[in-house]
Length: 232
Ligand code: NAP
Image (cartoon, rainbow, N blue to C red; front, side):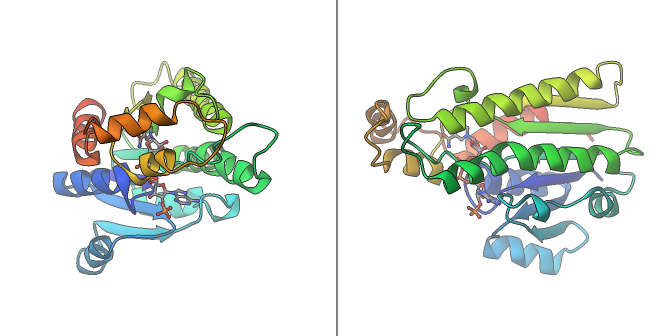
């Protein structure tokens, strides 16, 4: 049975990926600050398949280490999905709250690096290893007012390009960046609700929502599973 480590499953895309992967029969090690009632129910009734690990990914010391991950992975085919992310702070550099900058860098970039470092050590005996970084179109184009988000997603993509290169001659290991595209989650609500004076694209995101052009996270999760997370 495949062993999947995934971050940020309390809502949005992460919650939908959790459901899709549980449905497929994977064992799940979900990392985050919060979990839904349904997830807590599964952890209680199906503890061999669902482990909920509390961690604030904004705090590097809380990221699970290789020993803890190895205990979960055992020798199973191993998957790591970096889903947790934050779009804030939105606004002009020069007027951003410093604590929000530090948290965004920690959640979007430092935690994925620390977790991958532990995971790859823990997965040494797994015959198949997959790492997926949930990125954004903002990794490749400037969205005005999103400097921290653009920089951390671009940094994340470079990080996983570098890890992919490290394993280029090892067919056991596959590493990918995936852009889920816009979707109807709390992150989009935070974008629409931004009151920053420096975010000229806000109206565009508002329009996508008002015209019903945001796919559901369940649709996006199904696509990501079909394209990147098939097989054993
Ligand atoms: P979301 O609805 O805001 O959910 C974010 C998830 O990340 C939540 O489970 C949240 O947990 C978790 N998270 C945030 N800060 C955390 C922290 N400090 N420690 C632990 N977990 C934390 O976001 P989403 O829209 O589903 O986004 C999922 C991924 O897709 C992100 O990487 C995002 O950048 C990317 N993405 C989204 C869109 C979009 O249109 N929504 C577009 C492109 C890319 P809590 O409940 O504890 O906060």
